[in-house]
Amino acid sequence: MQVSPSNTERKSLKFLFYVEQNYAFDILRPIQIEAINQGYQVKWLIVGNDASTQYLRDDEQMLASIDDAIAFKSDAVFVPGNHVPRFIPGIKVQVFHGLNQSKRGNVYPERGLFDLYCTEGPQRTGMLLEAIKDKAHCKVVETGWVKLDALFRYQSKETFSRPQILFSSTFSTSLSCAELVYDEIKRLSKDSQWQWLVTLHPKMAKQTVQKYKDLQGENLVFFGNDQVIEALHRADLMICDNSSIFQEFLLLNKPVITVNNRSPLDCFINITEAAELKGAIQQALSSSSALIEQIKAYGPAITPFLDGNSSSRILSAVEEMIENDWQDTKPRNFIQNIKMRKKLKYWKH
Image (cartoon, rainbow, N blue to C red; front, side, top):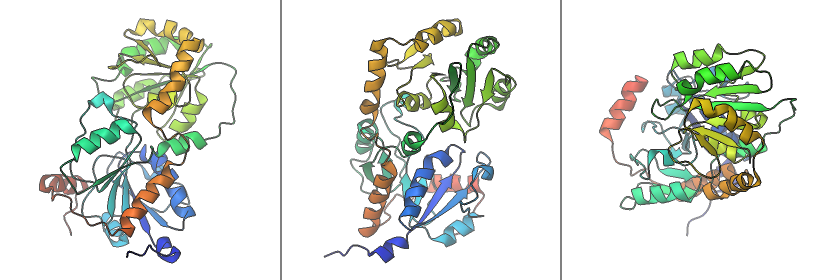
């Protein structure tokens, strides 16, 4: 009979947060809170040129190098992105950087890099179970998306005298509306009846980001990637495209306007031309009861976990694997391994 770890053994668990993009900080922090509350150790490893150590808080502990991460001998590595190096110790846990990926189709590219996938709801769970049906190297557990813990726990303290309009966009040129609506947002932001908030995907082209930053003034404020949750709560409505961030906004039961969304739904207003923006904003600010009901029904359709406790469920799934002595049987993935080593410029171990 297998004996579960004692409380002392549980407290010895060590977790590593693997960060490649600045959006990872908001995603991983609910897990950090839960882990520390349970007496576990948490360290951060920040790699590449797209994530900045400036977003770490004073009480958060960073490992200085990959060598330090290997020496840390973590029990689990939590990853919001799609890749993680095999040579860092620990169960590899994919926690995802957005809600369901329907914009990418109905097939999930399971690459054999993770031991555990923590999904937000039935759609992604089904996609992954189909992808691994003939494989035994990983598990899929439906836990809810961890970033929603931070989203739902956030307490907004400010009130504003005029409507707050949040514009956000994905980076892919085929899916983004950032360039299409730029001139219209520039024109509308000169009118003081609305306050504009702008936050863009961290992979957005630098010249596009700079164009929007140059619009900052009394009527437009640019929000960094570490301020997204604040912006979501502050805004009265969102303008977006195909970025999964608009799904987070809908979960706050607030209206969304999309521009050239590939899969329009009844719970948001979709337009195809920048000239339609002003009319859509006016429509959204006085949303019909039918639209409001559609918005309220959207959240449970995406994820059944809207209680702010997904981090606890994720840790429980990891603890269970550790207790059951999970063994790494992932494929060797030589090509992926070489790519990761080349990207990280690391050839040891």
